[in-house]
Length: 339
Ligand code: PLP
Ligand code: COI
Image (cartoon, rainbow, N blue to C red; front, top):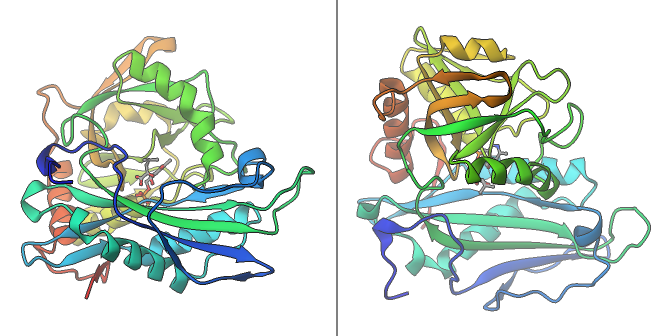
């Protein structure tokens, strides 16, 4: 702890003091518990292990110049976990319980919230899974909800620098009416081989195409895709991408800046027309894209030739971070200040 180099953190697991847990048994949620152990004692037939009854969330807390801790859009994450749970028939964590657990986990680990000057943040990872045993395929009767936290730096090593991405034609991440719009672990397992192959070849992430026709832009690694042209922010409409809270925030900020915004299917060829492109998410924040390679068809789409983010990506990034750190007013009610 004493030797955390706050300004040079990456997106890695770090042990903090405590985690917060809640069990669902006999049809109801119990009391919030505080644990210092990183380990759990789990039934070997838990549905979370066998049948993928599992969902997680990712959100961040920021320390401002005023020393106050701000949580970004926690209600939205609570709602999305509710939807993920509903989608794969898990017990749903009530919104108030989710928020209470997040606040408790931050307070108990307050000394791990990075200082304002570092530009780092506290990443909060709520996870929910079937803990009760089943050997036939059916929803569990018992669930465990855990919230743990850790200080993090940028998800992509480059931080806010454009990186190259690769179109994954050989693999699908999610089916059109599958679980792609939920934050469930199975989607990440399905995308892992594509991601690792891309990393080995020097790409920061993969860009998936829609799995039915391979015509439209879909999910962008652990983030949503956006493109910018003619003062318009364009992002995919798809049933198989996660409804990103960062993307929703950027759409609002773009509108506040007087830009037009469009959420619609984006045909692959349209990549040629974007002046800027990026990936956005809690961990990724905005990760500008330098170039997208489509190796199977021998095509590349270039967005940044000088290694710098485009002006609109930069403006959106600065605005979002300013609200998160409390440097600019929170006019949309996105921030919860910890008392
Ligand atoms: N898409 C995927 C697959 C993700 O894992 C994430 C990260 O949470 C996102 C998009 C971005 O979502 P959000 O902005 O809510 O973090
Ligand atoms: C996030 O942005 O919070 C994510 O969950 C992305 C990734 C670490 C899975």
